[in-house]
Length: 97
Image 1 (tube, rainbow, N blue to C red):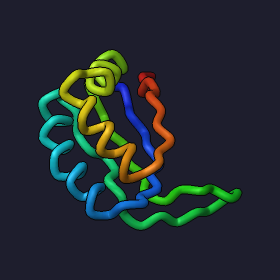
Image 2 (cartoon, rainbow, N blue to C red):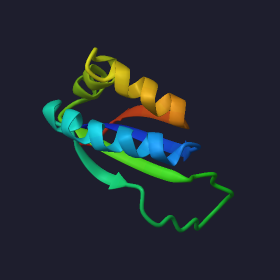
Image 3 (tube, rainbow, N blue to C red):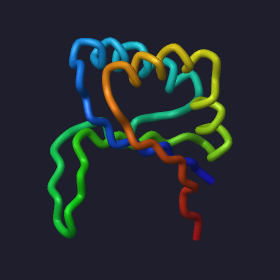
Image 4 (cartoon, helix red, strand yellow):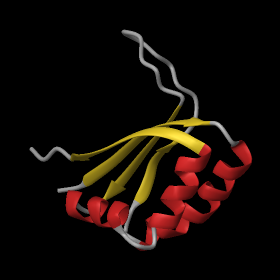
């Protein structure tokens, strides 16, 4: 079953975050992940959501998503992201009927 990494990102340093974006995409692919959502227009429909930049990554499993997030390869990129943006990040299992 697929696993998803979902992030709501609030960019403070656009130059630093752009560098993160350039470097992280190939690493996500190496961990068999792919972008389902990468920024784009947000249209709130109900409630008072506080989304700024929404990212949804799909991995083959929740374990693979966790392996990416915890990897030594991602650690320096995570630091770059944390220095240029604040984020809410979760991992969630996909649905299988």
